[in-house]
Image (cartoon, rainbow, N blue to C red; front, side, top):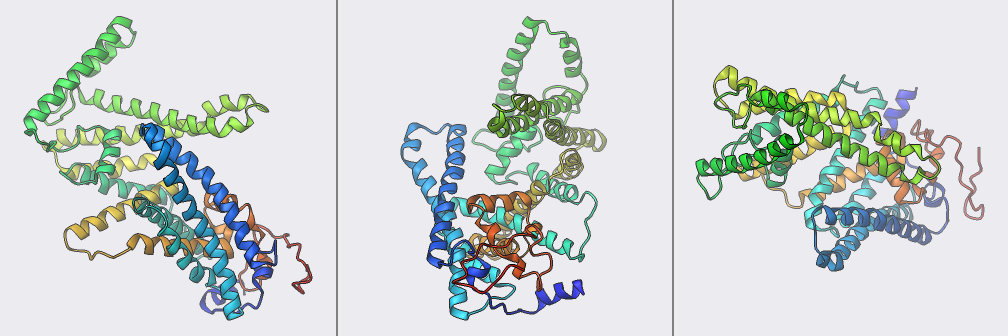
Length: 461
């Protein structure tokens, strides 16, 4: 019977005669007041979110005073208006639909969320639309998967997120070893992770041999300086470092020293970066508790997640470098296919730091890259406003889940919705939907709004 109810809820548009006050904005019977309340709450939170985001991004990118005097405020207000419009239009459409039709039915949130999201994205800057579309597509795919899994229609694949990440990494690192294979932004990220030694010859204005010569000279200067510092300090591990450097390397390897040193150097460097980044995040999140619990900062610095992220990045880079070197020794050649094999094997390092979010986002960005490659080659048609369409459909699906079955949303995104709406999303009377959508009120089984009985005949069961 339970499964039949779920099937009916999806296959047939059950008509619900509840008012928007009874079902949606239960804190006030006024539709205008409800929209105004949501707009004010979302705008205030958007200023905090985007203010911090753009301020930190400006510092990291070393933007000058001119940016913070003018462009910072333009970007902040525009993004804040985008998010505010998205939330306000959704609840306004929710009320407008009820006034026009007099009823609701199961997929209403999808129909109302799509235009609200599409219109709001038009307010946002063009360079951010694609990023938002990919992010929301990622959230929507995860949400749909959770919904299907909750219904017993699909089963989890052991280490499924690791497999997805490994396949995406294989394709990415295949293109990393090809000339002009990756977009500039993505290429820059991979160069920071793996260095440039696994890339094809740099095709700049200078001939490749001159580029290599200049690169080697720069490396020699840098290594000479670092070696001088180590020699002056007389560190105990200096003989070991020297021995690792003179270990053999293949003639096709472009790294300066031995293959073993090349692998270990990359692994240790990325372990330190991963540990520091995760540690910084933990410390910042613990600052609110530092006066009540001073030891929280120390706990944040030695948290196991720091080790996990460090191990993930260290093994990701180390395995990739090691496999590439090994394949050069075995096959006596270097090609892009090596990057694919090494990338797939390196991707399994996510076992140290499992993240469905990272896996899906990586896959979504890969799909975007392949789509644009298909357009460039003439194999795939260009779709006007694809970013707006993807964002609209994805956000509408997520809003649908937030209304009907919030327990199947990614917890972090559900908390985000509660934060930006001042917990208003939690005040929907989902108990009214339980007869048609089992488990709808799973997160709030005992919640019943404090209705103004002048505007409804509903009584608490």
